[in-house]
Image 1: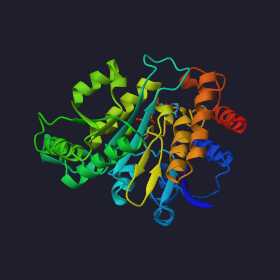
Image 2: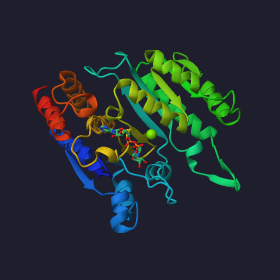
Image 3: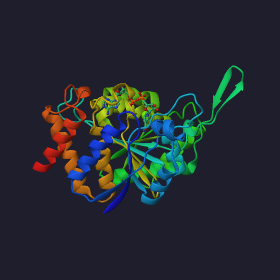
Image 4: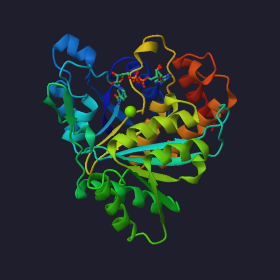
Length: 334
Ligand code: NAI
Ligand code: MG
């Protein structure tokens, strides 16, 4: 029996997390969920964004499935997601982006994984007004922080028989910060002579991705570029509702969709549950339940390919519940 933490989150979070929980139950992997909540709704009720029992649960179980959380803007709050990632040193944000059948997108052959550094860069949140009319932010890149995410990307490439890793940077302009990241990539790549290092400047990367995304297999980059490129890549395969993710450190992992709490469609049972369901599949793989993880991925692919039970964002009219039930029904036939 796996004891795991479940955080429903805000907006569409509870609806899609529920769908993912049902899909995982249908794999018959024995899970005992500890449900704790964080986010804006909790804040409105309890006056704190992350109650103590959330930290306790994460520290005890070490593995969590998490719904998106709304970050209040301009009230002096740090993003809860950034908080978890920093507090538990979840340095690797891993986001697989794959073409799914039956979705009208310009490319049919995208299969890449983004390794986004998750603890440094401009996201450390140090900003100040240096004069009444000028603001500055600190961009922090360390050798340790860079090497470990780059190493994770190369290890992934090696284990999964990928032939190349693209490091994305802007070292031509930011010579010290991005220059250090690039230098680390060159160093680490020497340990993997069989894997090609592609060096791509971030603005060129945007063009390359929208023109010829199949040339990339593994992308490793700093926090901000990784955040932006993830959404760009999500768009290439049909939208934010499709891309799962994992925040992984040395002794904790939190699995969550790339998308946010989507307040515009919350509470209507119309959100696409695919991204969080696939995040659940990544979690099962992390637990060593590879067959069950593959089962979920296969069912998701086939249900989307059939186009009968798909949500509005994919051009269908199924509800969140109908789509996840179709995935469960399909799993039972495989
Ligand atoms: P968003 O990802 O929530 O939504 C962007 C657009 O994509 C919206 O039109 C939304 O309806 C659509 N969308 C997102 N997920 C979908 C799904 N599963 N099915 C169908 N359509 C979907 O991004 P936005 O609006 O910038 O952020 C909303 C809130 O979420 C903010 O408070 C933000 O801070 C938070 N957020 C939280 C994240 C997390 O908890 N990991 C990640 C990103 C944003
Ligand atoms: Mg993002």
